[in-house]
Structure formats: structure tokens, C-alpha cells
Length: 201
Image (cartoon, rainbow, N blue to C red; front, side):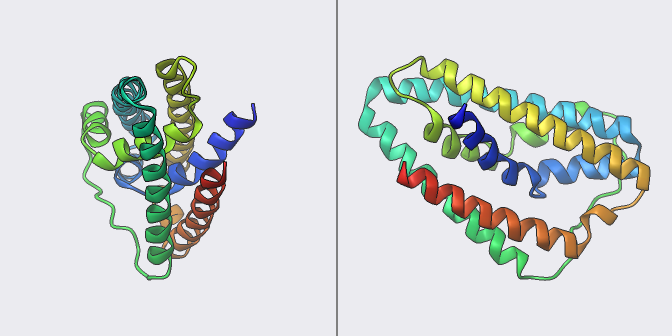
């Protein structure tokens, strides 16, 4: 339970940071309605499922090949989290609103899937996070799949709530410059703290 709670605390800042997936979902909810945003959310989560399968199998193969490689991957993941935190903190210091496309798309499910599946950053986040919470001696692929399922459920909840909220307001007020900078600043700080905690365990 402690490991699971730590995992949730680590991934929530990443989920809450506006990225390609969230921006696509937001644009569909704003230009269409809540159902359009929810369809886009379903597509994005389907893309995450593909990532989780690839990473779970990859981690199992790496650990079977060499425990040294696994620990190297773990430390590379910690370094990547620090890099993401630094980028978020730097971005939080710069003014500028998020650019949203208001073009309405009828195939939100397909576009959402492609947005997530073809985003290399999503795959990197999986490789950065999962090794930190996997116990090498016990069913690695199963552990990775369970953690991925938790991540996908959290994404579905956050993005669905965002879709409903933005569809009701009909504008991008929730993604204003001030709120964006606040979210990115807090998320960057949390990721930095998470990276330090993971490096010390």
C-alpha cells in the first residue's frame, strides 16, 4: 500500500500538467461538448494501454537479461524525472497562454489514441516511473501492468473531469496563463521531491 500511494503521489503531478494529450482533450471539450472530450479521453487512455503493454514486456526482458541493466534503467528514470521537473519549473517562470486548437473533430477516439500512442514522451514517462516501483524478484510484467492500470485509471478520472468542466464553461478559462504557471510550478516541485525520494530508496 505504501508503494502504491507513493506511485499515485508521483504520477498525479505528471497527469495534471498540460501536454499534447490533455490539450487535445481540452480542445475537443471546448469546441464540441463533454461527450467529445470523453471520447478523446477514451482514445488517449487506449494509447496508454499500448504503452503499458510494451513497457511491461520490456521491463521483464531487461530484468531477465541483467539486473545491472535494470538498476541502470532505474537511475536513468530518476534523472529523467529531474529533467522533467526542471523543464516544468522553467516553463512556470515564463508568461504565455496555452495554444488550443478549436477545430472540432468527429473521430475523437481515433485521434486521441494516435495522440497518445505516437507521443514518445509518454513511453519515456513509463520507462522512467515503473522501474522505481517494481520489485525485480516478483512477477515483473504483472507488477508493471498493475501500476499501469492505476496510472490509466487516474488519467481517465482527471481528463474526464476536465472534459466536463471545460464543456460547461465553454471556454479555456481553466487553462489561463496564471493557472498554467501555478500548475507547472507545483508539479515541477513535486516531481523534484519525488525524484529525490526515489533516488534515496
